Amino acid sequence: MSEIKENSIESAAELHNDFRNIPAICIRNLYFSYQKEPVLEEVNLDIYEKEFVSVIGPNGGGKTTLLKLILGLLQPQKGRVLIYNEKPEKQRDKIGYVPQHAQLDLSFHATVMEVVLMGLVHNRQWFYFSQSARKKAMDSLAIVGLVDFANNLFSRLSGGQRQRVLIARALVSQPRILLFDEPTAHVDTVAEKNLMDLLKQISKELTVILVSHDLGFVSQYVDTVVCVNRMVQKHPTGTLTGTMIQELYRQSIEMVHHGLSETQERHHHE
Amino acid sequence: MNEIWNAFTDPNFYFLRYAFFAGILASISFGIVGSFVVTKNIVSLVGAISHSVLAGVGFALFLNYRYHFTYITPFYGALIVSILSAFILSFVSRYLIGRKDAIIGAIWAIGMAIGMIFMAYTPGYVDPMSYLFGSTLLITKSDINKLIILDLVIFAITLFYYPQLWAYCFDEEFASVRNIPVVFLSTLLLVMSAITVVMMMPMVGIILVLAQLSIPVLIAEQFVSRLYLVMLLSTIVCMLTSAMGLIGSYKLDLPAGPVIVLTSMTFYLIVAGCILGLKVIHSIKSKE
Image (cartoon, rainbow over all chains, first blue to last red; front, side):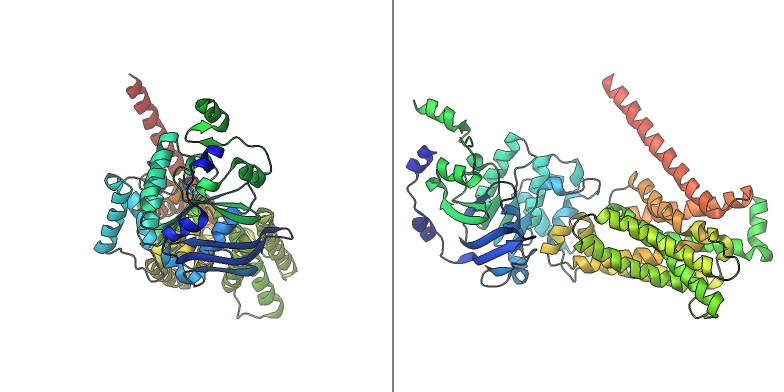
C-alpha cells in the first residue's frame, strides 16, 4: 500500500478542485440505527459532481445502509442527506441505481428491452411505451454494448451481461448520479474488468458511487474511497494506506493492487 | 358428449350452466391476478387470505341464523374479512421485523379457527365443506353478474397499472427508487387477490382456490415468457381446466372443485413431462 501512497500526488483538496465544487451529495451529522446499536453515526460526507467513488468497509459496517439513505429508501434518524440541496425522494429522477444482478428473481421471465424500459416507468406510465422511450432504451443498450440482445431473455444472459443490462436500465432515465451495489459481485474476472472499464467511461459524465468489497481492484479506477465502519472517512485513492484499511476492517488483511498482493508486490519491487 | 349437452341445456340443471359461466368468467381474474401472484412469489400470502375468509363466512352465517341479521350474507362476510386480511398481511409482510412466515401461517389458521367457532355457534347444521371445497349448487345468477363486474374492474386496474405492477413484481427496490408507490401496489395486489378468491369460493372453495390461481400460470410459463402473454395463456388454460373439470365432475358424480384442481394438475404434469422428455431427447441427440 505504501507504493500506492507514494504514487499519489493528489491531496483531497486538489482532487476536489478538479470537480466543479458542486456537492452532488451532501450528508451532515447523519445517525441511523435499526435497533439500539447505531449503524451509522456522525457521518459527514460530500460527494462532488463527476466524482468516481468507491464505498468500502467490513460486513455490517453500514455500506448498504448508507447507500439506501442516499437513495431515500431509508430515512435518517438524525442529520440530513441532501441530493443537489433537496431530499433524495425529490431528486430521484437524478439518481440511477444498479443493484446486484444476483438479487433479482431469474424465474421472472423478462426480456432485456423490458428490463431497460423499467428505468422509464413512472407513476402515470400507460401500458404502452412510446417509440422515443424505446429509442432511449436502445441508446442505453448501445452504451453497455448489448444492442443485439434487446429481445433476449434477461435470465438467459451471463452474470456480466445481466449487470450491464441493469446499468442500461439505470442510464435510460439520464440520471446525474449512479449508485452501484457491488457491481462486480457474481461476475467472472474478465467481465469484472470490462464492467469497471465501462464504469470509468461513464464516470466522465456522471457522479458514480459504487459499494465494493474488492478495493484492490477498484482502486485502479476510482478517484476517492469512502471508508465506512459506523463512522465514515473519505480519502483520495492514492492517499489510502494499508494501515488505514487494517484499522477500518479491524483485522490484518492482504491488500491486492494491480493484480498483485502486497507481499507479491514487495517481491516484485525487490 | 350428447349427454353433457342435454344436461347443459336442461332447464332443471341451471346450476350447471351457472357453474360453467362462473368458471369461464372467474378464469379471467384468475389468469391476471394469478400471474402477478406467482411472479411476485406471494402465493403463501394469498393462501393466508383465502383461508382467513372462513372467519367472514362463519360470522355472517352466525348473524344470519342467530339474530336474523341478513344484511351481511356469507359472500359479503367473506369479502369484508378477505379485504381486511389483505391489509393486515400487506402491513405484516412489509413492516414486521422477524418471523413473518410464522405470523402469516398463524393468520392463515386463526381465520379458519374463528370461522369454525362461529359455525359451531350457528343454530342448525352448517356444512363448512361447501365453503372449503366449493359447491356448484351455491352459484347463483347474481354471482355471474358479480363476476362480470370483478373481471371488468381487475382488467381496468391491470391496464392502468401494468408497467408499475410489472416493475413492482420484477424489482421492488428499483421500483421504489423510481418513485413507484410500491406499498400501494402491494396492497392493491393483495386486495385484488382477496376479491378474486371470494368470487371463486363457490366454485372451488377457499382451500382449493390456491391451486387454480397458480397451476394455470405454471403451465403458461412453460410456453410464453412475457407477463401479459402469461396472463393471456393462463386465462385460457384456467377456462379449459374449469370447463373440463366441471364436465368430469358431472360425469363421475364428484364435487367440481377437487376435479377442476386435479384436471389442472394433470395438465401441468403432462406439459412438464413432455418438456422434460423433449429436453432429454435434445441432450441425447446433441451428444451423438
